[in-house]
Image (cartoon, rainbow, N blue to C red; front, top):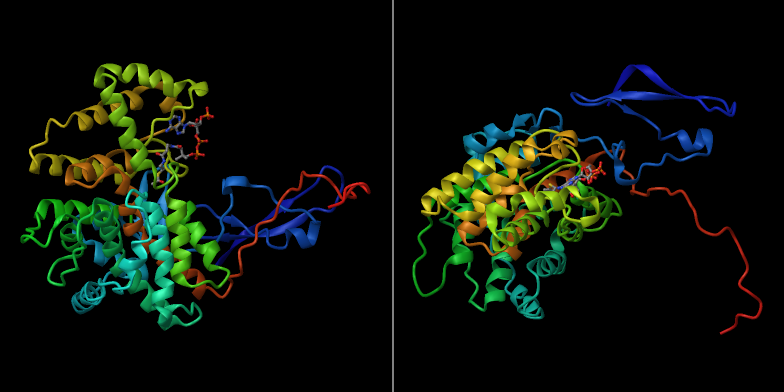
Length: 436
Ligand code: ACO
């Protein structure tokens, strides 16, 4: 970390001595004030629920400029990666810091594609679930269970174990997601095929059956690959911070990633794509575009508890660049499938148009996020709504593992242990008459 020339001084109105704190500069983005010695110097903690102003780590992986609406993976703009690279190139970049050269590209693709099969025993574990279980409940279990199957890559202090676990997770997630889907609909699992691309193989495992050959549609393959790229990493969001915190105890990588899957499930995070599509379907069922005004009034009424799902973001206070790319993909997929007049896509565009002109949204800088259009694309591809967040988890696995491995390699890493402002009862005695 680079020390800045200036320092921060914290002074107190009660005359307690002021304290000086160092400031560090990143390569871009806000500087940070180092408060690590604050407690030792003042006996006080800082208070920042929701981490509104707290950097929990240093990282060189992903950078977001929320005001500009810019997203960079290892310095490369998401728009360039989405059009010039594929998902596995992006995985290589996130894990290693650089785009692969020709040789590395071939080797990495082969490495991942050759590790897509899961231990045969995994399907018996899966059978313990009800067929109607939510895929995210199943995935949380399956990913955590990987640690019971791959004992030779669970030592997080061993860089070779970390490397093997990373490849296994990236390679096997599509297989697990597809297995969770097939189990739910009562169809046989499709084993992976090494001659297909990462996205093409996933499409076949999802929609193929043993009864006939499955032909991968290149437009849908590209669309899915783009969904994976756009969701690959997003710096210190809730699920990534969960993975880091969970991994900071020294637990194995599969357990830490399972914690990320569980966190992602929530509707304020990865579950937003599912919630967004359900919202669009509800508006459509109640009258469609004609009811948009009424719906917007509910959204603006704080007592209604209704939110415009797929809108707003903690970091982006401008258009989420992923939403633009997703809208493009939405057009391509709907055109390919002859669904140009899809009513939900029309409804989504109408909602976006109204929201972007409305004072409520303008003042709060609320723009569409990636999930506003991703659900429409996924639904058109044939992915059921309940699996949307599972697709997100599949794509984000590389980000989680890259961030976890970055933390473990950082000499400054410690077990995460937030403090608190205690507001409960001070010490008191159990009443003498209270006995078991
Ligand atoms: N609809 C209506 N109002 C909203 C929305 C929305 N989608 N999002 C934020 N607001 C309002 C809030 O009510 C708040 O209003 P106030 O200042 O009058 O109280 C203001 O905008 C600021 O919002 P906060 O909730 O304070 O912002 P925060 O950073 O805590 O939350 C979040 C961000 C959780 C993403 C929020 O915008 C939201 O719930 N959006 C809908 C869910 C969603 O799409 N999540 C996906 C995020 S992207 C991802 O995880 C892939």
